[in-house]
Structures are given as C-alpha cells and as structure tokens.
Image 1 (cartoon, one colour):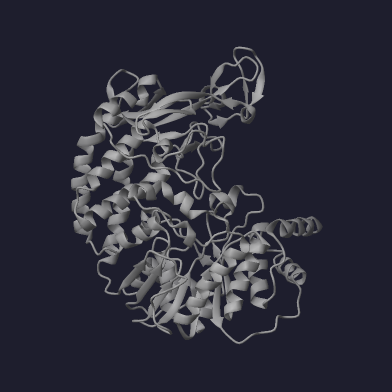
Image 2 (tube, rainbow, N blue to C red):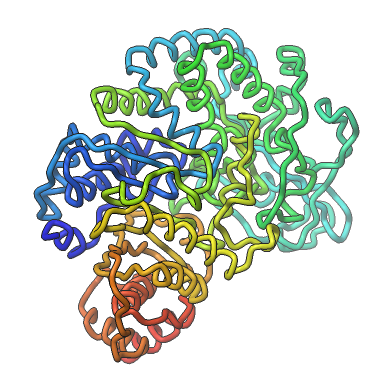
Length: 591
C-alpha cells in the first residue's frame, strides 16, 4: 500500500512519445510503461491483472512488460518515488470493440521481431511494384516524380452570382499560411463568410455502388512531390487526381460497405458519404483495397500484422479526414492527420501517399514486437462485453481499467472506418455509452457500467484494488460513474490526475471541456457516511490552495474538484461550465 500511496501523491506522466505511442492505432492516455509501474507496485510477480475495458491492449502489454522493465519504466518509478516489484504478470482483457481487440490480439500474437520485419519487407517490396505508379506525377519541370501529398479543395457557390469558387484558391493563402473566414467573389465583387456559402455538388457514377450518386464537388488544388529525392510543390491540374490511371491499375470488385451513422453525422461535411469508399479519394481507396488484398495473401499471424500496419495508418492518414493546419509565422501549411474521436472532413482535405506512410510506421511496430518477445506472462483477450466474465470468483489480483466516458467519444461509430475493412463491426448493443441513436440515456449507461463493476467485484480477490481512469465534463456523467461504483460497494481511497502534455481534439475545442483525467484507486469497503462538507466548500478550498500554482487553470480546477468530491464521498453537482464560471469570478478577485 505504501507504493500505491506514493503513486497517487503527484500528477502522473502522460504518453506522447515512444514506440508504443507511435505504433498503437489509438494511443492510450497513460503509456504502457507508466501502467507497468503501477501494476508492479500494486501486485506481486505471477499475479493476474484485469482490464474490463481493454481498448487496444495497453494494460495487458504493461502487465507483461513488468518482467523486463525498460529504462523508461525505471525512470518513471524513480520520478514517482516508488520501488516496483518487477517480474512476470498475467493479464485478462475484455474489449467489445472489434478493431481494438484485433489490434491487441495482433500485437500479442507472439510473432518475433525478425519474423515481422521479414514479412513487412516482402510486403512492401510487392506493394511498391503494385501501387507506386498510382502516385506518379509530373514535377514543375515536366519530369516524372512521386506524389507525397495533395491538398484538395471544395468548390463553394457565391450566393449572389452563383459562381463556383475554389476554397483553396480564395480562402487559403501561403507565405504565410492562413485560412480566411470570408471570400470576395472575383466575378461580382461581393464578400461572404465561407461558413455561409453553399458547397457545389455533382452527379457521380459510383463504380462500387453501380449507380449515380450526388456528392460534394472537390478538385486537386496543390501538389507536393519529390523527384530524385528533392521535394517540390506546384499548383494542381485535373490529371493529378489520378482517377483514370487508378481505375486501369486496380479494377475493383469490392462489395459496398455501408457506414452506420450515429451522433457524428453532419449534413454539411458528410454530404454524399454513405459508404466506406466515400471517405477516400478514388486513388487512395483503390490503393488501400489493393494493399489489403495483398496482405490477405500472407499466412496467419503475418497477415494479421500486415493488416494492423495498414489499419494503424488508415483512419488517421489515408482518408479525406486528413488535413493541413496553419501555424503562426509558418510559410506553408502543416500536414497533420485526422482529428481523433470525430469523423470531421474539412473544406480542404489532404490525400497522402499511403505507401510512403507505411514505410514510416514499420519501425515502431518492430520495436514493440522486440520488447514483447521475451515476455513469458500470458494475456487473454476476449472480444465481448465484460458484463459477464469467464473468470472464477476471487481470481483476479488487481484491476486497471479505462471505461468509456459517457457520450464523449462514440468509439464504435469512429472505428468502423477500420472495422469495415476487417469485415466485422462492433456490436453496438454491448457498447457502454450514452447515445441517443442507440437509445441509451445516462441511466442505461449507469446500469451497464454498474453491471461491469459487479463482475469486477465478483472476480477481484478480497482486499484487491481497482485503478480507474475517468473523464467527463458533465455532472450527470460523474453521478452515473459514482453511483455505479458506490452501489457495488467500491469507495474512492486515493485519487490523482493524469498530467497530459497534449489535450485531445475534443478537450481543446469543446466548450466546457476538461483537461487532465482523474485516476481513482477504488477499494471494496463497508458503507461510509459522506463527509460533512459541501461541493462549494471543496471548490473554494481548491482555488485557495492553488493561488500560486502556475499550471492551475479552470480545466484542471474542474478535474481537481471532481476527484476531491469523490474522495469525500459526495455527489459531483456541477458541470465543467459551472466551475469555469466560478473560477473566472475567483480569478477576477485575485487581480
């Protein structure tokens, strides 16, 4: 217990670098290295660790890594002032998501780093011959070069004269890079906000659906390439779309894969997107399809590892959700991936060269396989709900888990961009979430969460501990979480905060967002009367104690308020917005 007390005495290190961050399809909030330190402090070698919401397997991998601590793990332990008991552990994971469980199983398929590298080398050699010509473009001098990426542009309609205007040409500028919120029509001279302008549409003969559809009209706007190792860029021309060449190179017989929309659908930027291939340029869909079929020619574990390589790059970098951003004083736009947790498509989507991206993804996976191949512990992965587990009563020593945060991210809806390639999407009936499209309100979410914690209580050994990462900006979601654990008999014994160096997209742009995920240590205990303190008094106390703390801001204030309420055993009564209002008032009095 002494080690656990030390672990909860200071903010926890986050995960934004290293092999696991770069390899994992959805990087975890806490790195496997940090989780490994926790597990090694909370358990003994040979113990069994459970994750009831396993994600892509970080808890299981962390349990195995306890046998061979890395230098980073040793450094984390030193920084937290703990002395872990290193040694092999075993892990059991439950994950309802098809893609996440596939990723976890594939990473743990016991393929060696040498076998992986051999399969990848053979795959990339064939892939280069197969698809390289799809990315052939002419450089500014008319020589044949290689497309690195291309910015595409929507065409907007001038409300006054009806002219089609390229968003890239009229609302984006380089040297320095910038996005304009207004466009002045060169034909009629009128100025309009870009958000108020309708987008142009076109009829398109969809070769996969085998019928004509209506979709947004987009054109290639700017091309970035290289010739003999030298990078260049130029304005795009119609031939840069590569559609005609790719239809000849990759005649496809793929069956249509329908998108099942839920909370994330937007009538604006998702216009015409009804099936998986609509999330891609025609070139990138056909290339992705060709590479997928190539991966299927490899046997067993090798084929799965190659599919995971493809999928780890796919949703973030292969689709129309890829984008550019403008940073202050930058001469050109900065290339970046899709925004996490949403299916946003910008007015200027980016088409990346998939082949070049795959080459960059190989090394992190090889490093992960190298780290794990010496581990002797076991890891069981169940692709189903944790509401009913296979484990015997009192058979698990420790639980480390990260439940879905209410309605924060609809994982099944997001992950279908990858799961449709696998041919098996998540059963949303088992998804623990608040979702109007699924008919799940906060009470349904609470009951599903509580059912899982009942199972955790059943399989956990007497006096065992549960570490839970949780995040929400709404009091109702916190109330559902607290009710779920307290009704089972768990009590918050300790709490800390995840010191994230980079917030997620939703945490940055959402009004009332929260930064810093609380980590709770739960223990089964007899009913305890709530402390005689109000949540208002807790909030005032937190602000008073952090007057000179430079890192203290309103988003961190809310996280600290939440975990203090749960430690005292009282209800979280305020949403983040309400705390922010109090914080602003308090800050005003400090000036």
